[in-house]
Length: 331
Ligand code: ATP
Ligand code: LTN
Image 1 (cartoon, helix red, strand yellow):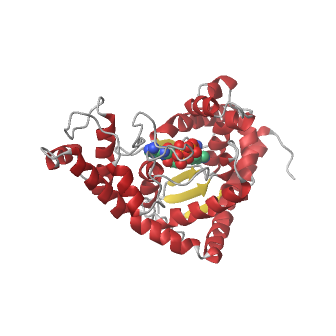
Image 2 (image 1 turned 90 degrees about the horizontal axis):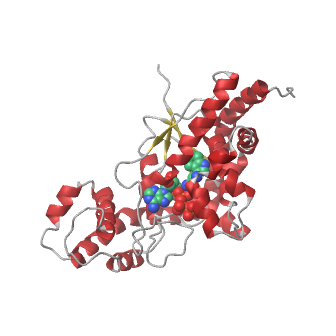
């Protein structure tokens, strides 16, 4: 029997999960369980590149785990784990730091954005973040990495680092491909549609959280920024309306043409209400299930413990291979 291809992805518990991370990543993860061997993790090591409150980080990590499961990522079919539980991530991260160039890291858009926003804390971890991310991916010999558009550059760097290592030491790492959805790969803020919807930025009214109440969600969509043309059409110079159409498309499975037809001659008020309604329909069951799971700490613990056991077996195997190739004496 042919082995299933492997998938790996993670999200930092650096803030509450948003509609953006759901549409760009999480929604697609859940759908892959039957066809692929899937590993999904909570990237807590990555979260501390920006200062975190310890109690909040701990709470959010468990809440994010409950939300993964509530989004349909079944722990029986997928391996779900917490990054800091697997020491091999930091161990391979260090090795890969030595095979990643200063110039490459300097070109990363996320580093440039985050250092502009955290000018008082441009730490070394923020800079070398992509080599830890490369370690996350390469440890599991992942074929595909389902992420939003903003992470494409990091997956490409991962391929370059893997290739560089393979060229020196022979075939060691599988070269991963980014898997980016056609619709929903970059959901924008509802208030500032020129900016990505992001969980670590306080963007009042612009960001929808998976755990927001239906009333809050509807209110945010009613207030979403549009334009003065009064026509539901997707194009570059209508960023607000195009973004709402994308969100509607992901929730309903409809094409842009179908949406244009559906709302032809109807006002933006009606359109925004309809988008709010389909988002509530999509998120309400996730919120309910996550709330239920969050009350069951013993269950969540059993999930991340079992996940760590499965993940560490795979990760350790790759790490041993790498240590041997670079010339470390076996313990
Ligand atoms: P932070 O603000 O802390 O950097 P973020 O919200 O930008 O976080 P994450 O939640 O860490 O990003 O991203 C998790 C996954 O969701 C990644 O695969 C990312 O590409 C995707 N993602 C994040 N924001 C969006 C968005 N607005 N649209 C589509 N995909 C997104
Ligand atoms: N860099 C990603 C989170 C992340 C990740 C990964 C995604 C860390 N390690 C490995 C895919 C695979 C982010 O900022 N959203």
